[in-house]
Image 1 (cartoon, rainbow, N blue to C red):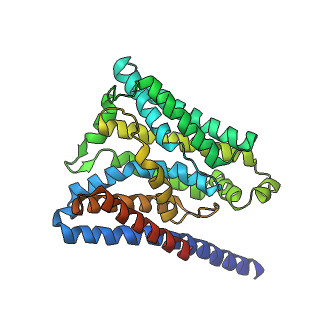
Image 2: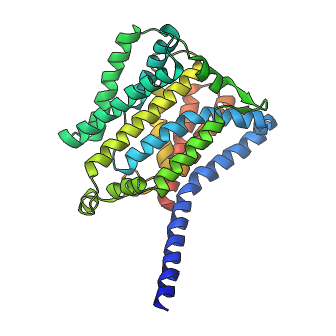
Image 3: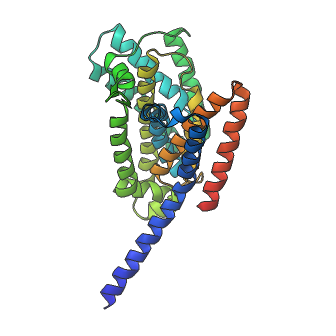
Length: 325
């Protein structure tokens, strides 16, 4: 009888956790749905399969970046080195591929290896030197800015390897961007890693309390370093995708992704203080911001007006996310 009661309590507990996690997703997906309906009112073409595929394609950069930034924020940190980590990957790939004609797997490994190294230095600097994440990652971004300027001489150069261009320009069935297929696999794997693995539970534990996590036997320093490495890898992967989309690398190609990379995570229900959130909420936040960008761009020619609307919607969405959490 006691065993049956325990199972019943456990099921209620799991249901409560599930419901709490679901509430975190509400603002992002409700907001995205509202914007989609508004887009249909403005232009019926907005709802065509081809246009929906394009929106997902354009959101793919933030969806990928958001996973790494989300892990960092879950531990109570922040990664401000994303813009030039992204740019570094694109520059490395555009030089090693077309210029030196190296095999595509080698090019990808080299680009992601560089960005993983950036994340490793960020993490080690934070846990060994005791530097605040904001200061460490901002300094790293500044360092990478100078490094990329030296390598490129400040001018656009190189070109995208063929497989990357095909990934970002190809269409399946004439309407579905090729990148959507591996993106679905990425989202599923990332959601499972964070929500169902021992590693994910350790990330949440560190974000809730580093002291309690340490007393529970978790190597807090290793977890913190690892999330910055993953953030570097995600920024590098997004850089490769953006290189395939733009067909060349250029200075500052990652600048516009810094604040949105944070916004999609918080809009998606992740606490800015760490320890609470879900990656699927981040995906919803990325879709919301891309829909907002698309609609405001079609309605207003002024970049200033777009920025005002963009900031206002982000502010409201973040307030709702905090209220529901």
